[in-house]
Image: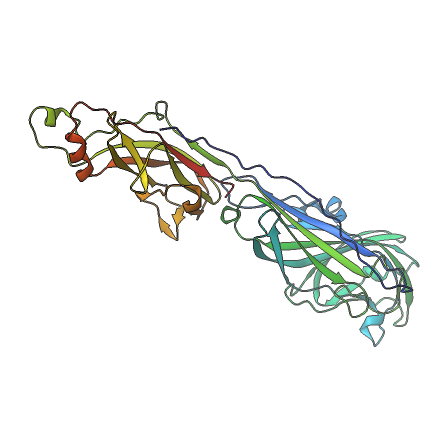
Length: 398
């Protein structure tokens, strides 16, 4: 019997550029693009690590970014606002998109997975066109609270959405200037904080998952900055999503596990001394398992007999050997714990195992067993040695 070896699934990275085509003679409009990324490296936490480069506003308010994902969006524009205009869209106006479902697909298998993306807050930095700073006013509508920093020429704010699932417009007003005060503001940087609701990584096969969402920018769009907006950097924003999953996968067997001697529970001495013939013979091989994702297992045989592996004597008499596996709690087959589950022969019949939680350095067992009737057949060949090789394959690459 040959011993299995642990493997660590390797991930290849591939970046795909998206190109937007336009009708002939249509005005050129830029498709903006940004990528949000997360990775899992087989840790016991069972959670993804956000690897998206942080937004610019994190340089100012690092505490706001300590426990949430952030990203800078390539959205810039010029806005002319009227302080207390009857039409809210004529004021300093920001409307952000609500929660969206996004499908990501495994880049090798095409397997789809669903997750959700939600904008939680926004920060903007702007150059001011007059001493009256419209960004220094108070937010109303769909935003609450505000952090701000700056001077009379340059200013940055950060505010959170009241209802990120379905946000309403945010409007800034200030009471210490005339109601009809007109200001022109040049927005240089837009950043957001976000939340990704991702399936647990230990339920995902290893590899790269990718997907994208497309948002419109401008009046009536997903990102809407109201009326009197010019110089928008683009009219479309594509947000790409990348999940890089790499599982820990190690089976560790003790020295000598490459050879399994099958015997009765209390050895052969009782039978050799004239006692009752043994009911069965077996050998248990313990192992330690590190696994943070799904995997498959099956066996390969030197001698195939009765649909399973066999051992054979010099006279070519064969008996079947059952190979069964017991796995630690937290690993399931078809939603059930794995206790003395017979392994099939061949890759096509492999059993699939799912992780209900990360499993790190937990015990398991392989049992090799010959049943009673076959033991009786072996005893009719006294002095014979039965042998055969069994290879147990554990495959995390599915």
